[in-house]
Image (cartoon, rainbow, N blue to C red):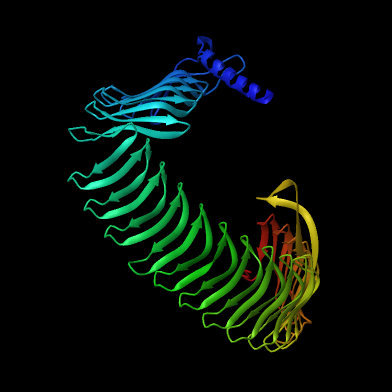
Length: 568
């Protein structure tokens, strides 16, 4: 009781404050103008902003503002209190007649509301209270004759009286009882309502301009009730829907044409209930299943366009549960597995279309767990790995369709780590890499994001690759955080004679770069710094004689000489 009294007191206090607030001259800035265009030729608005010692400069509209259309005609006059509509607001026609008049308290319509025609005749009059229409609302035709009277009570609109739009203005609803019939220009009935005690009650019809029924139904105490039917322009039934007190209740059917159904089911007080089925436009079953209080429940079936079953599912209160079975369009088994509480659980298996096993593994609470296997179409093992809590952990192995080991390595929490080996199809070693897991600052556009860390797996440590020609060493070096670092050597076939020996620093050439010919004779010796030529650039002929000498600084040649027309 105490809280209720306090609440009522606060409402009265707020209402009193809203009435007492006044726009003071000292709170008005000098008049400002806003414009439609960048050239400031077409005035849009004129008024003042709020200002005070605490807020000397604001863009809060305060006091009276005038608004104009692009051609300079006055469209609106409104009163504001610190950017909120507060007081009278008026809209105008181009002929300066009042179009609409309303009153606001802090952006909320309150007090009288009126609309007028361009000739000044009253069209609508009513009352708002704290943003909601209340009491009697009167509507008038353009000739000034009453059109209707409505009473708004507890957010419900009751029709008290209605007069027809024709020249006779015959009254068809009196004291809340009667009918409203609207017509097309040629006299064909457009809509038909029956009113009882101010509310729509009884049959309702809506027709097209050629007289064909488009909607048929009924109201009870102002709410849709019973069976409603909706028709296409040619009179063919399109939808049949049941209602009770404005909520979907009973049959719900959508038709593709005169004979074929697209959707069929039932509602229970606004929620799907029982067996539902959907069809394709071609007439084949698309899916079917059960609802319980608007939630998918029990067994569901989904179909291919050819009518074959695509998969069989189970739900419990909209959550996936039980066994799920998937099929190929030719009815061959595609995948099987189970759900518990909407999460995958237990063994899941997938097959090729010829029934050869493609993949198998288990889930625990929606995450992969234990050993997982992938297979080639010939049935041989393709990949073998282990998961822990949904992340790759342990050994990884990949094989060719012939059963040759192609890749082997180790994962830890989803990241590559330690030594990884890859092989050619004949089983000879192709590449030897090393990975390491790092936790580092998260970066965005080259900038570190404060407080955010990310885990990455980078190449780190020794690296070797081997030739596909003779399977001898082709390249050696080291990585540091995914970047080449230290001495890197490339070899000619045979793996003995180097072709290039280069120095790297964090992924960039840094130090001496040497290139040799097939016989191991030095051809070039180039100095680099941070990826750019810096220092001596020397070139030699096949006899080991110096034929060119240059000097570079930060990638630019600053001096040099050539002998015998040599030009590298």
